[in-house]
Image 1 (tube, one colour):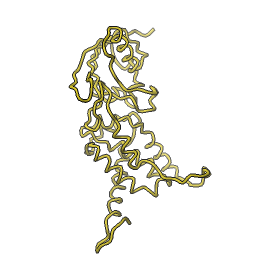
Image 2: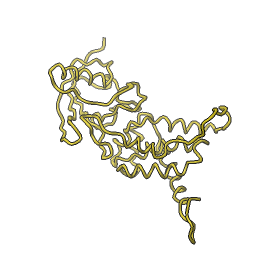
Image 3: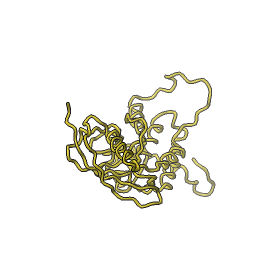
Image 4: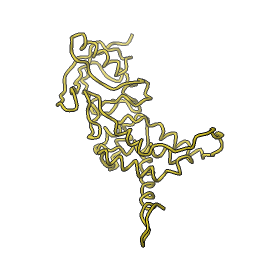
Length: 262
């Protein structure tokens, strides 16, 4: 039987977006190494509730590394110390008995803290609404092979589509940039035939919304790719930048008057 461990947690507590927050120390005793990180927090919360204290608020849903709802910075690393792993899939065997862990929310102006470890990631939703979709006519579905897609493009599109929108890239970036997230959502459509009609409208509108939300700029630190639990590549950012340059050129009015897009 695996030996249970005892930990000390320094947890960020903040009652609301309007209130000041602070770190509060909590013991996490008799923790099974087979527990997930969120299950460990559940155990701590059960103890707090038993004492009549407010439980620690944190985001979670599927707890299977799929939905992107969970997310917290564990001792300075988004999602914790294990690469390619969401917080909900991080197990306590990644830690040692006696460890002192600091747990805090994503830190970004565009992700305001709602309470404790919960942040408002609605900015991501608004970026998607600005152009992260394809407009298709209704009717009978096309045959699967009606639009042939080169395997390389299909693989790259699927890799980009693996993004779960958790926000770890923003939390890891010194500039709180959302470029990796936005570029993944743009690339998954830009690489496919269905995404071509709105390709340049999409990149222009989504980047404009990203800037309006207050995210920082990309200066190629690479922390975003390192923190991403799905391994989204920075090459998507390069692809997005190329498309944005094209979009900027074709939207310029021609010399000598006139207007509209090319």
